[in-house]
Length: 175
Image (cartoon, rainbow, N blue to C red; front, top):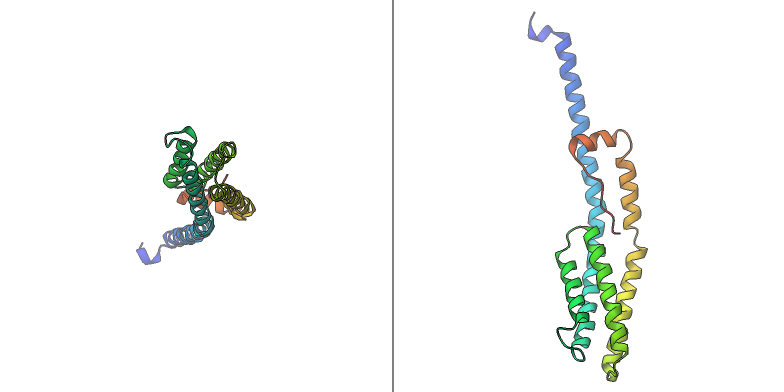
């Protein structure tokens, strides 16, 4: 029997080509969708987090004029900002964001017990208000809903089969 006349082998090759093309095109499509969802975080929310960190640094600057530079409040803020700087994933950045908010609230409260000059009192209030405003912006972002949609699609057939074979992971939440 000649190779060119072997119909069984031909059908097996056709099946292999079809399966490979479905896996490749499915993988490319799922990767593209995941990248789009994750880029929406890094293109917008990540910038908001960096701005929040700057406001937190400003609040620490005010605090450093009234508190010892080694105070737990200033150190906690510094640690929270470092945590954000070192965070890579949305979930890690969320944890750092919460730490910054908590450290900012503590600094805001302790500075409220000190007689600040007018400029520093204004800076205390405005920087803390800006941190809270950014938290509100982050909460209203559609990122987690976009992650939900992607992950739901990823867990449906045939995407779940393609994802498991090509090792495409669920998108990570900012929470």
